[in-house]
Amino acid sequence: MDGISFYHSDIKGIRLCETSLENVYNLFVPGCADHELYVSCPDSMKLVLDDADILENGGEITSRIKNISDEGIPYVALRAVTDDGREIFNGYINFFYTSKLPSVYITLPEEDIESINAENPEGEKDKLYASGTIEVFDEEGKRDTASRMELSRRGNTSFLHMDAKPYNINLKDSVSILGMKRSRKYALKANSYDMNHLLRNEAALDLARLTGMEAAVDSRYADVFINGTYNGLYLLCGRIKGEEFPEALSGGYLLELDYRYKTEEKYFESHGQGIVVQYPLDVSDAQLDYIRSKYEEAYDAVNSDGEYEDFIDVESFLKMYMIQDLFCNVDVDYASFFFYLGDDGLFHAGPVWDFDLATGIMQTLPFHEELAKRSHIIPDRGGIFLGLLEKSPRFKKRLAEYYLKEFMPLMYEYAAGTMMENGERTAQSLQTSDIVHRFYFRELHSLDSVEGLYEWMRDRGELLRKYYEAPDEYDSVTFSFAWGDIRTLSRHGEPLGYLPDNYHPDNEEDFWGEVTGFAVKSGDSAVSIDDSYIPEGDTVLHAVYSEDSHALEEGYVNITSVE
Image (cartoon, rainbow, N blue to C red; front, side, top):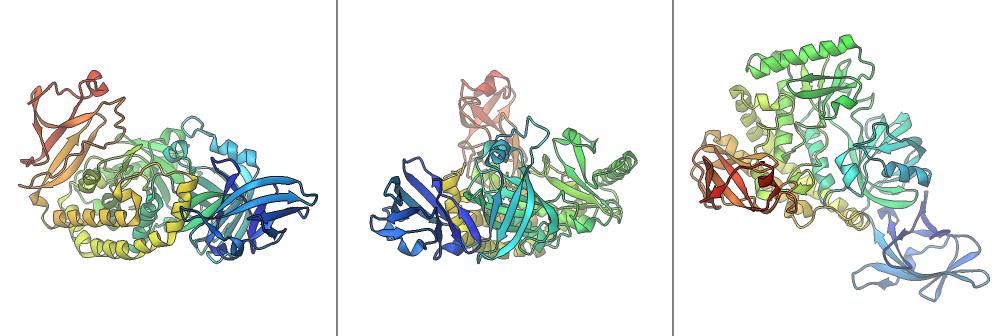
């Protein structure tokens, strides 16, 4: 509604948001202003609340909200009239309060943000950049940062498919925001997929810091307003590609495993993977050859289970392995896997980044929760060195010792403490985010609440405990779908207890067809199984598709009969 906005102290220009109902608006109020919000309107305009109370420019409104809807939402009936009595609005305003968190206010031309949001990251190499200003306020509403900045898109799948868009921010000067490391480049990660999208990303970043990984990213929760309109809860992070990060480089090279490597300026290919040099930006061809040569030496040493300690910082790869494996991050061999060649001549793992596709999220759909908890993805999705290290007996011994003695106690303490507190602290902002940008995934316990995420991590952690205490007592059970395979852990002599036939990635029934069950293959035929099936050693279980399945038509699967 033009001409009317709201403010609290130095936070100005909070705008009303349209709804699907005519003359009904939502107002998203930052948590610091829950008891002290003022209206801004032309001096020639008066606001009539509930046909009685008159509010003029600069008037305080929150104490005058008397109505509560059947859904428990505070609201006011509002008429806007001019001095001569002409009515220019007659409707309702619903009040929604975010959590008491820091808030970010970005101001730029409206047509610029519309152009950025309309970009296709898969089809357009050159990004649009929009100039504007950014103000950051702490949870008490005190200004922390104000700067000129440039805004651009970030991400790929999340930007292309989700309503809540992630962004990159380039500041005019290097500054510390909300106590984070000084940087000129920051990222705004959106809470797009589900209720726990940012909680699991923050949990991965927190565990990296708590384990002492030298390269770890700072992050803060913040509610974001763009041109005064509420845009949801975000995670404000230092950018990995910033010149200031990581301090651990000390003259080394920051590298990234990325399937989009051919769109970058400096990269090399090795063993079927593309590796991008992200820093320094001006790497010469001679330096690129040096990095490639060092990488090949390290790869050969790890692959042969040789003296790989002379080539990689094993401690950092232990920690990276545990964090990737705990959260079942399916991007581990695909994108956003960072590592660096330090001035000590060793490759170091880190920083961890991007856990959007984790704890049961894979591509565009969630997959079976039990399948995710029991998955053992690193042997097949090894990332940089991780899959090779998995085959090293001495690395696996260290991995078991590290998990049982250090990582598991730390993870459980974090999940029960800080993570649950983060869930409580962000709860209202998650609800307001869901109103603005409806979350994509719903009705899966591990994705719907911090309690669900905690239970998922607890169960996953318990499986890993049993496995690392007695790895020889576990078999590998691979569920083979038309789209690919998922390897899981199963204890000797115990029934599976589940079958992942109701969810799996991209299982759109109008394309793949319905998964009707699973079978053990024997030649051209197969024997159907149920969840009481007890695997005998390492086993492959094949998804059985309906007869009209695209998977059968195109030969993705070749089971022709099931007994």
